[in-house]
Amino acid sequence: MKQVSTVRGIVSRPWVVPVVLLLGCFLALSYVRFHVNHAVSGDEPHYLLMDYSLVHDHDLNLKNNFQHQDYWSWYPGPLSESQQIGASQEKTDRWYSIHGIGLPLLLLPGFLLGQQKGAAIEMLLVATLTIFLLWQWAWQVSKDRRVAYISSAALLICYFFNGLAGYLYPDMVIATITLAGLLVIERYYRNLWAQIGLGVLLGLLVLLHFKGIVVAGPLVLALTYKTCRNQRKLPWAVLIALVPMAVYFLWSTLHWYGVLNPTKIYSNVNLHASPPHILSAVLFDSMRGLLVNNPLLLLVFVGLPLWFRAHRESCLMAVLVILPSVMLLTTFNLWQGGDAPIGRYSFDFVPILLPAVGMAVVRMRALYQKIIAGLLFAATALISLDFLLTKRPFVRSDVRSPLFTQLERHFGIAFDRLLPTFSEATTLVHRYDFIKVIAGYVLIALALIYGAYLAAEPVRVLPKPVRKTKA
Image 1 (cartoon, rainbow, N blue to C red):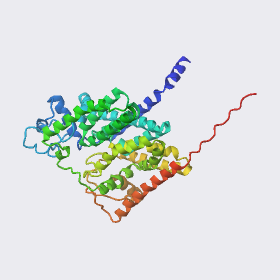
Image 2: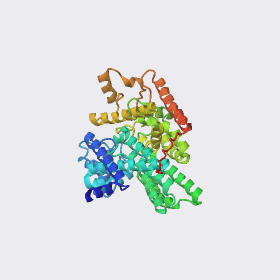
Image 3: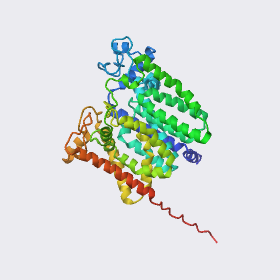
């Protein structure tokens, strides 16, 4: 009896269920990562080579590492440096990677423990932390545990998340730091140590990738607004922790590459693409589209009006913080993400909006509403399951999704012909694709209108049953 009561006492503690759920998430993501187990590709070997140089050479000059092929243990083949070192460095003795040093610094403990596999496990821990922070963020803005759990579950089953977890790209870390920053601004902005910690995280954000600047800036502005409004002072602690790392970023950019504009480092990147074309491709492309591969994200547009009505300040803050990232992506010519998981560029900011999914599902009480939400969740889970079972390769230069090819083989219908298809240059491939794009935006508009209707509709609260008292 004592053992039973002890077990019940442990289970009843408030921290037990979250810890068990997070452990389950970590194990599930680990299974997906190491079952699919794509070979190291894209930018990943270069991040690992930077770690190798830090450990063995104590510097970030990669020339000798390329020449000695120090990457052989995790990339068994010749690794080209032509696209991966800064501009005008080919004829010098110093080859510095075009990639920020933030991710190699973060991955260094995992690399020391287990090289590529250790780094992958560390990124799985970051992915689990992302789920936890999303739960906290959804709870903070809704004060409803159902919203928090639904939002976290939605992220877990989305292909653009579980297909990215455990791979060595900065986007997962950017989203994690953004969620942490929003929580500090909402909940801990008065705490000195929280401000210092946020400053360090924002400094790491700047070192991760140049696009981290457009996230760090809005977060600092949001915190400044909050502290000035409520405390009549500036968040000096954040600035004191952030400025040295930002100065180092500018100094290293100038010293290593001879430029102050970090976008000038890249030989294959420009920020002059057409925003309408890029946004349409990111959302609706039949192979790489965010909504096509994660259909439950359509509920974000239903939930945003609900969020705005319930907690206007946090909704506006979330949208304004991520808006510069969205705008940057819509001018980025490499919208498809290269040799990487589908939707990884979008992952920088989409998790911040996922409380809207939880709010939409909680508010959709009618049977037909529950069926629609259930179908969107089921379709998203099946796409992730297909990725797991077929070990779907990363997108390269293909124009047809293996998923739709497989569906056509079984049902004889090319479902992707109902969707627009974009080339890598964001030109439309098939006839009537423009009409399909318009239909996609109409669907989003209808979701927003329906969310506004739900937000305006009064919530019916059933009266609590009256307990009969004995005479």
